[in-house]
Every structure is written in C-alpha cells, then in structure tokens.
Image (cartoon, rainbow, N blue to C red):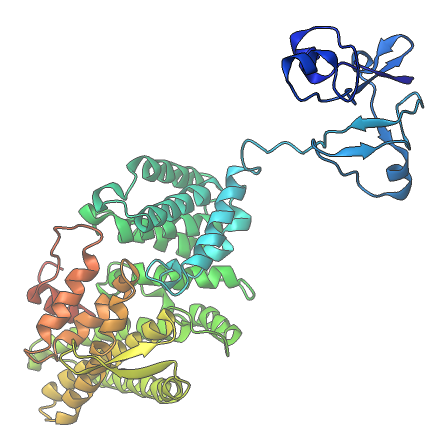
Amino acid sequence: MVGIPKSNRCDFCKRRKTKCDEAWPTCGNCKKAGQQCSGPSRRVKFVHNGKHARERGVVVRNVSSESSGEPESGSASQLLSIRTRTTNSGATFSKLRILSQRSPVPLKVPGSPADLLAGNIVAYLESSEGTGYSLATFICTLGCAPPLLQSKEALFDSASLLLSTCQKLRQGTPPADLFDLGSYSRALRSLQRALDDPQEQKSSSTLAAAIYLQMSEYLFDGEKINQISHYNGIYLLIMARGPPKPGDNLGCRLIVDSFGFLFGPILMGVIDNFLIRPEWQTSIRGLLHRNEGETLDPVPPHLVTYTAMLAEISKRFSKVRDVAPELRDAQELEEATARIYDLDFKLRELDESSVPSLFQSNMIYEEEDPESPLGTSYTFSEPTTCLYFANLAMLRIVVSRLKQDLNEIHVVDDPSLEADCLEYSVRIWKSCRYTQSLKPFCALAFNSQICVSYVAAPPAVRPYLLAAMEETDRYRNDSAARWSEPVIFMFSNILQGRLPPCF
C-alpha cells in the first residue's frame, strides 16, 4: 500500500475546478485573481492493490500502542505521525489525519425500573435528611426496601407512589394534584395480588407495602383523610406473621412503623393490644438492645412499649372510672392504680436518664423567641430528637391526668399533678417553633403532642398552638381547617380512655 498525493492543486484552483500551474509559492491563477495562494495540498490517499483504502474498509492499527498497552489519542485538528502504524495487511504509510473515536452517549439511563426507583429512594433519603420532607420522621424501613423492589411488585408500586408524591410536593405541586389516583389504584391492585398469593401474603415486603400505602394516604390524601384506612389489614398481616424472630431487624422495625396507625384502634378497643404480650415485648426489646448508643429512632422501641402499656391501662381504667361509685370493683381499681403508678415510675426513670443528657450535649438548647408567648423556644440537633422529647412529654402528661382521675375517685387533692402537666406541656409548647420549621409534612408528627398539651394551656398560649396546628395541615388542603378546640379536647380525652359517645 502506498501513499499518493490526492492533488497538488491549491485550494483556490480546486474550488474553481481549474488546472493549477503549481508555480509556488503563488500559482498563476491566484496571482491573476489577487488571492493568497494556499500552496500544495498535504492530503494523501492510499491505494492497496489498485483500490482505495476506504473502499476496502482498511483498519488502521497502532503497533506501538498495542505493544505498550497505552491508549491511542488524537483529535480532528491534530496531525499525527503514523510512521509506526500499519493496516490489517501490514502496509505502512507516512502521515494521516486521524479522527478520535468517542463512545456514543446512551439515549437513556441504563437499569431496570426497580434499579431506578432504588436509586431515587437512596438519593431522596439522603437529600431530605433533617428537612421537612424527610420520610425518616415517620418510617424507618424505607432504606431497607431497595434490594426487594426487583421481585416484589406490591412493594415497588407502593414505594413508588409514596416517593413520587413526596417529590411532587417538593417541586411545588398544588395540594389538589399531589395524590395520583392512577398510581394509587395500581398500588392497591398489586397489594391485593400479593395478599392472594400464599407465598407473598406473610412476607415482610407485603407488610411494608401496606404500611407505605397507608402512609401515602395519611400524608397526602387531604380530601379523604382517615376515610380510607388499611390499619385492619396491617393488623391482620402482623397477626398472621407472628412475633418477629430473633435477628429479624426488618420485621421489628415494621412493627415500629405500623404502630402509629394501630395505636388509635388499640386505644378504642377495635383491635387487640398485642404489643403487651410477652413474646412481642421480647422482640421489641431485642431491637432496643441493638440500637443502644445509636441515634434516636423517630419512635424508639421503649416508647412503643410504654405507649402500648398506656393504651391498655387507659382502656382498663375507663371501665372503673366511668361507672357509678357503688358499682366499682375494688380489686380492679387497685390493679389499675398499681399499673398507672408503675408506668409513671418507668417514664420518670426514662426522663431523668435521657433528657438532661440531651441538654448537656447541646442536642437541645433554649433560645429567645419574641414570637412565642413564652418568650423562649427550644432548638434541636435533629428532628428525631425533637420527636423523642415531645413524645416522652406527651406520655407523662397523660399519666399525670390518669393520676388526677385516681385522686378524684379517692377524693384526694394533689396540686402537684397539675404542676407536672404544666411542666411537660411547656416542653411541647417551646418545641413548636422548631416543629414549624419541619413543614410541610414532618410537622404533622407533632400534632398529637400539641393536642394533649393544649388542655393545660392558658388563654394567651392557645391561639399560638391552634395556629401552629392549622398551618401544619395547610399543605394537604389549602382551605381545610380541621382543628378547633372541641376536636382537640376530644382527641386528648381519647388518649385518656375517655371515648366519645359514638364509640
């Protein structure tokens, strides 16, 4: 194979398709036309056995690069020396303008839909940490879902609905357009298929799918809030699965995630309070021991246990308190008294062992707040610390109210109990500024605590608390005003076992 000049004509003669006299440095035609002559062309063509290389698809190889293992480099504007390069047939040549080959840009991101959703979940959890969009405030198992998405259709659809709705809220979608009924219907159908499959109906992924579907409705379906509930299905799934086995960390955390939806029905006696059984408490304690020394969970396992105990105590005590004095069973009253004081002791012990250390380590600190009727507010290192602090205060308020009811039965006046209620209520009120910084939907996790503390609030504080609760719900429905004093008092009474007449 030899290199033959393609043409010696200058560029001007070649454009005009005329013969060039090659009188360099300026040919005759350029001299007559007053043009700057480009000189002879440096381009060459290659002929192998009488045929051009481009007709045979001859491939250029770099012998030196192949032997040394170094990659080739070059660009369209760079003239490279290729004396050491050869073609497939072994022919050599002098110089050639080489174009570098670049890998084509893929038209779409590689990976299955499950892979893409898994990546979106991880990215969302990382980017929303510590903000008002963090799902970790409500559920602690979403980070465990990515490995299961590929083979679990129900989990994929429910997690996709939850995540896509959160992302739409983050992008500023109006409240009426947040909840996609098409995706919701698809998730419902997938969940039903999983429940009909004997191999899938008791799996952790099916229980997680039901929890995530319920969470999507709670957080975003503002028009029908609490009208469609899957708590009974979640409860039946948990009962069918039984207590988590030792080492089943995901199963234990799913119980914690579901507890927020089950607490109300347990308190009202709609479903059985299974968490007070020894085998279930053992499972929860196993999770507690595993998390010692780690960051606080949104609802730590010991608070789940104590809240379940409180629900059972309130329910049993109501049977003694809400009857005529002559019909009260003395033994039941004595047992209820012992349970209330036992729980009060455990909560006081937990409070004294954890809350002071949170202040000492500056995970909680107090600042001046001119907008608060109290003059100061608490700031927290992270939302989970605030939720732990507020939940513990709420439990202590409810137990103090139960002790007041006991004193009323025994005709005992103890002003210190009202002082205790005020002390723990102030903790919640001073947390309101921080909880409002967790809008749009993380602030929802604190409405129950505000309701319980509202009873002890003086007239100057109540408008502040009511405005905070109404503002928290605004993202779900701009015109909704769900909170009023009668609703708040009813909710607080339910936590003390005082059910409305309709129940």
